[in-house]
Length: 114
Image: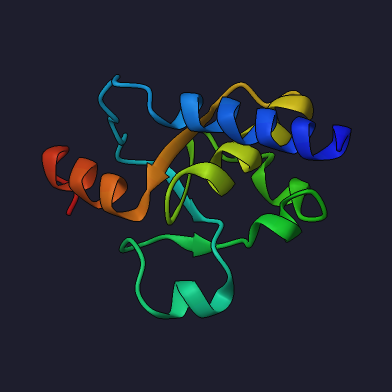
């Protein structure tokens, strides 16, 4: 019972983080990371994005060390929020939860990158 409450609370917090109304701005040198599964990634993603599924982020942490602007995204923003938390806990300061694939694609168009 307590585990279900904790999980629900974490999901709610991630939902709040994801629904920040601040517009997403994508710098030209951003490292775009799709944290969906390889199967989801295979159905289409953001141009130039790499696929690092959420369940691999912690094991692949060294791949992010030399990146300046990391933007995680997924289907809804929940998994990308979790990925951001993982990097935050590992001392990264340059990480953004971009939210959904749709939101990142829109931001790229608005930034003149898409």
